[in-house]
Image 1 (cartoon, helix red, strand yellow):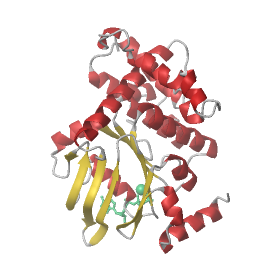
Image 2 (image 1 turned 135 degrees about the horizontal axis):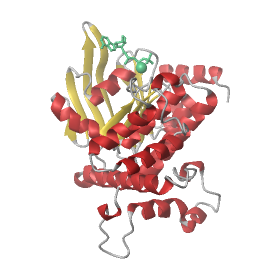
Image 3 (image 1 turned 120 degrees about the vertical axis):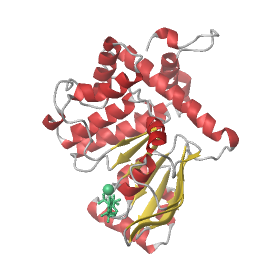
Image 4 (image 1 turned 180 degrees about the horizontal axis):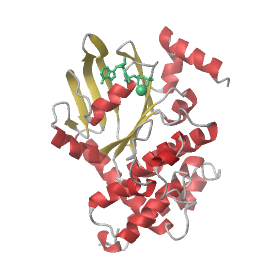
Length: 329
Ligand SMILES: Nc1ncnc2c1ncn2[C@@H]1O[C@H](COP(=O)(O)OP(=O)(O)OP(=O)(O)O)[C@@H](O)[C@H]1O
Ligand SMILES: [Mg+2]
């Protein structure tokens, strides 16, 4: 991104890169928070990048953060509590099998919603409806203020520039290299030169913990690595919202921690609106502003983790209890 993309009209207005540095490094902000050291979530995403690529990635990420703030402001302009994403009384059946029945939930701009529930309750189907890969039978599906439930494929292409999905298996293009996969959305923009693209790709791969893997093919990577690359590719498209389908399953605990930490920092630092489908309660506890719990086609709970713990709903309590058995506190 050339410097002149950011029009400096006033000396007090900083470039996005400077603003990101301000957000992360402002000593007052750090001392405000109980004079404790910078929390894990505040550690700048670009902190550990190689010197040759850090400035390009910082600028790219800061531009994304600024866009997301503007998108959030646009959504909340008319109504301060307006959600960025919402399901309103959504129904979806496959033949006679009703997967979703009158399901409602919402995500405010910059917030994270975790979708919980047992296997087969329609968590992935919900994400696919949001992406327009599946259509709901009735109800309203709102993204950035628009009801997309009746959108054509062409209209959905525009929505998918704002909202992107990280699939469980990564859904990378198998016949091109990891680097080409991440470069794909950057090339689509048509405004970056090859040197800039190379730096951003290298930096994004470093950021998601798979440094130096540009020239490998997706088939050379483990499940966790593929997912990391998929997150890098998602970020390359500078989305306003990211939908993650079980980002921490089928990877080792260290990789799960790295991915969880990354998702949290992306939320905080890029103001990304996120939906995370997960079975991992620790992860949900760390990330979720709100939780929707799906059971037998219905959203049996929608609220905060604290509210979920206090709920006397038997299904929720059973789920929480089983989780403690699997993962002792
Ligand atoms: N395209 C489809 N055609 C027919 N049935 C489908 C289709 N997609 C999903 N289903 C069915 O809808 C139900 C919900 O599927 P979904 O993949 O959303 O479950 P899930 O909650 O994501 O489960 P898991 O935790 O195992 O990933 C399942 O019974 C599945 O078989
Ligand atoms: Mg699923």
